[in-house]
Length: 515
Ligand code: IFM
Image (cartoon, rainbow, N blue to C red; front, top):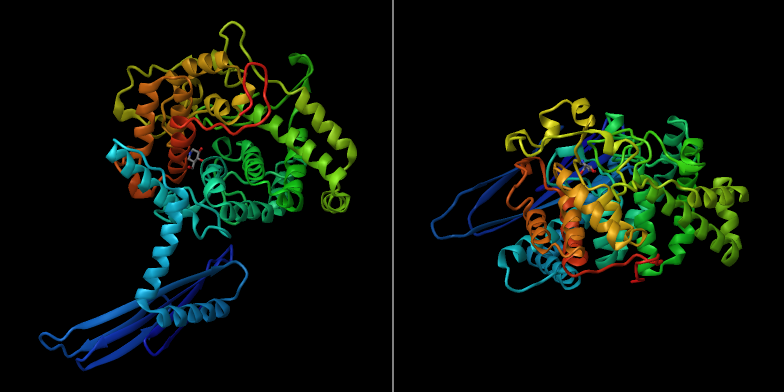
């Protein structure tokens, strides 16, 4: 769009073709030397160049400091971004490199003071944990208005899109260590609500459906079975919102932003499910994909039904409390969403009547209605070079088998531990763990947490090390495409919830204690 040169400074800017995202990049230079020199600066559409020709003398130092700034926006013009870039460069040059270094030092000191996990006796694991925490910082520190891509800013895998990874894997860490960033990321979801409403209409549903993968709020999934059909993204947003409010007590955010998200997501669930005669009039949700992408478009995915129920319940309590405590704000929510009081009753009933699959004979929660009937996959005789299965087998072959890519019921048992008895947790884990390939990097951390809860110490340790080393040791052989930011957040969860045993769900059920 714009490129120009001023003294030893170059500014360039670009706008993406369809989504109109604008970026400006500015560079400036300070040269310090007693040697004579000339400088030439040029710019063209995609190139900025500043060339110093120095008549170098032996023993006479030449120091060049290069300053770079990136400015991005969805709303500002490229002129504005270039002006902003110029102001940032002015400030950077005025502070000098040592000033910038000192402020970066303070920033990182604060980060480590609030976020470090230290333990004795396992130097390599300690190093891996800090590597993971540092990269979550890199991915999230400036993500407030932009989301946290699956690979952070470290590679082109997943094209910069972000997923539920943020809400389920990374936000819990941020909620406890940097709630301001956590709130801003939730605010971003709030800003996407209109896109999500539109998306729900596109798939013939009421309410709002958050995109499975996105940059700007629009659904960017190419393949619906392992994309859009993952309706549980709505509940992931609810889960992160609830955790943020439970941990910080920020009811103001819940009332100003959260309530509207909850109304629209609850509406989606109420509209998506139905009361099934074949299931004794229970509320069933058909045709969805749960977290496990090796079993797609299934009926009554246990994880989805449990999380949808939580979403419906939270919407009911939030809206009712709002009505009682803050009628003015309640009126605003009603105006913005067209909420009818009868809907609250519908959500309550759908939650109460939610069908949660349970197989009495096996004593487990089947992952979905058909899961236990699928043909077993011969995992023992599958050679290591045939993993991940999705790269070597047609999806239709995988979908016919009883084989799991990533924690699904096991994830539900961690996120909603209070919904399961200790006996159910053991039986479910023993059933699902051997069927889980861990072909997704999002799996092992969760398996590790539940293994630790069950006292399976060797397994918990093995999973913790595997997850912690995921990128540092390049265990999946794909670090070239970027780091696995969700797995890094999962590693934090493995340490804090798995090894240290934190539980922060509320509400007790029979057999489970309140935290
Ligand atoms: O969101 C995940 C998904 O659960 C498994 N495949 C990769 C996605 C991005 O990390």
